[in-house]
Length: 225
Image (cartoon, rainbow, N blue to C red; front, side, top):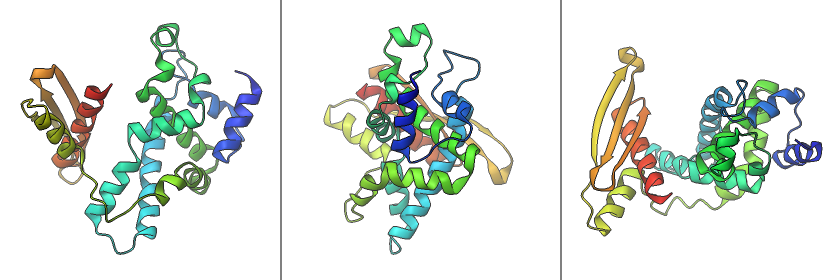
């Protein structure tokens, strides 16, 4: 990878890595190397959710939990993260296996969004939460500023239902596939099936409701690919 691209990327995210190996790993897809970005993406996803939650909590002190949750979902999702990835020109910096490269993996929303989260996870490991907060503020500021709490943000299940109804397609079925963990910290796995479209999407979360929303979101993205 050309050095100037890494320098430009770090300038755009407002952070220069002390350990440059971390940013290189964050840009490496599992198809390319054993030292890939999936664990960093897992970490970055959690950190991003926390930071955005705090930003919204502070910015909208009079808004209830449900509204804050929907606003966070409008920011922390595959579409938004992939858009940010394109603004950062991550597609041309990704390290992919030959198969993924040939199939256009550097343009795929799922890979691009995971890479953004991996970069945030890498920043967290390199310098901690405060550094990630600065980068998140840079990357999300314009989007946060455009949020209007008075606008009804529809959740993924509602969006999916309305999309299907508008096209006279039978509504999806949701099925709990598994429940794991102890009673106070359970993880639900839910499958969303749209048989007429041949779509099955999975979601997981700390409640059935959250898992269903995630499955619906994945189904929507599958329809809109």
